[in-house]
Image 1 (cartoon, helix red, strand yellow):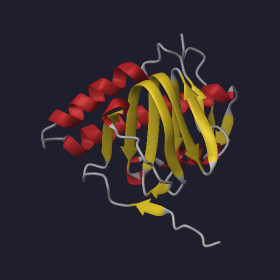
Image 2 (spheres, helix red, strand yellow):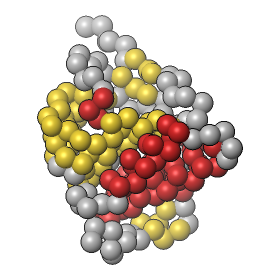
Image 3 (cartoon, rainbow, N blue to C red):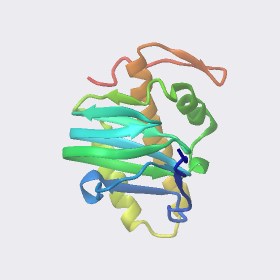
Length: 181
């Protein structure tokens, strides 16, 4: 039996290196397994979302966060009454420390439940609006700062869900005790 070649989606992002898209805006029909050359965060506020990641089925139910690293094979299988965002990010916008954390959780803790009151749900619409309306002056600095903040909030959820501190990049990263209060 011949192997099917898995598509690699390359150079899909605008020059700015980040794109935020509401889940409801994407078409999920007839998804074939593929890889991307960038990170993808899925931040779901409500609903159910079933997808396949490296040939394993993953179900997001309710408020959830997950990520897909560049090169991971994935496809969307089913979604119901979703509200949330896809955030597509070039690897170059992610700090070394955050990349190390993503690598640490790769294939073990990529999808986590989060609190319905998590601040990331307030932050994303603001960031999305800024991306749509940002002017050239200080554009790169603003985008880099907001991207770093978003990834920090996202990773805080991964670490808190793990419920333990980890030694990453010679820094002791501990979960915040007040993240979901």
